[in-house]
Image (tube, rainbow, N blue to C red; front, side):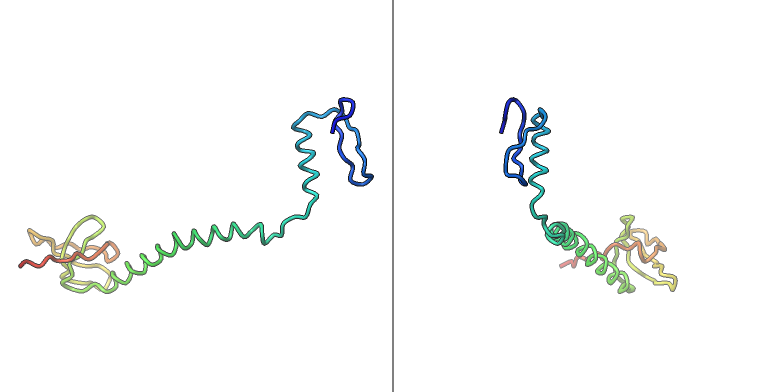
Length: 133
């Protein structure tokens, strides 16, 4: 409401218009915004619920699959036996011919039957042998 070139605001306490100094439009917007914040504030639970929901979805989509993959990898590494054909993190494919007590494996690598000693943790997976028919 404008009176004589001045911005006026409706006074909530005395129920009449109160004239003020000339204000710029952005200042008027912020003043109206401040008046609107006098309403009831949302509860802290309602404000924190979206954040909790985002964290829960992130956990379900990222951390749970990583934990499953890590458990599967640890189970595979702990169940290695002589005769298994494995792939190392360096890309070497070899057959396990010995398992040492210090968590190292001895691999035989074809075609020259070279023996390599690698750590058990460097094994990334088992290689499926193709059956010739």
